[in-house]
Length: 247
Image (tube, rainbow, N blue to C red):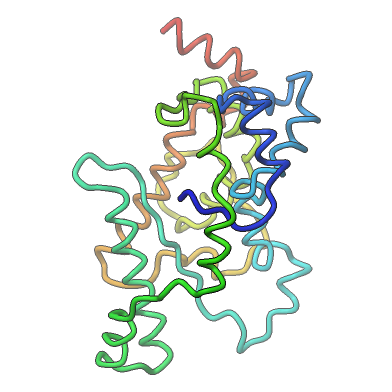
């Protein structure tokens, strides 16, 4: 989207001027043995869509101190809306479908009938005059950047992928915790979080059986794609990637 609301000068300087739109610059600096780790871990907080980890969003149900303030009539359900790349389907369309199914459940749980839900879904929100005026004054910084690789983004190298996986290791532990216990553990190198609210263990228990199975499969896929990098007994990310290149 070319329209940009709010002041994002620090993020703009980081992405445009310092990183030159190369994600590897920051990702590889996030390896714990990188001399630039401390600086990189501060800079990642400037990126608005990445400054909060999954564990930050779920803090209210995984932090024992915060769990105690949830009243019995408070949080009743946690619903995971997942999407993983699949050969047989478009990820964006699957996300749209999962989101719509979640919205339908929320409306139904709050007492709306099918006719009322249908009217809500047909409603098309209009851009307010206030936002229209802002849109005329501010454009996304990428539209005026001289960097040419915005259209053809630089891919993330394996080293950066490993560094990021380990930097966000607790997020993968949270994903592991969302899977049912007692089944065959095919991702043993990722440990579960302890003392979490039981709601975390049932985030896929909603909607049709197809939705539930798809949700669980997506969570498992997220872990499997990073399992090698998260196995820290294999050594540093540099060593893991070097072994990959040699194999």
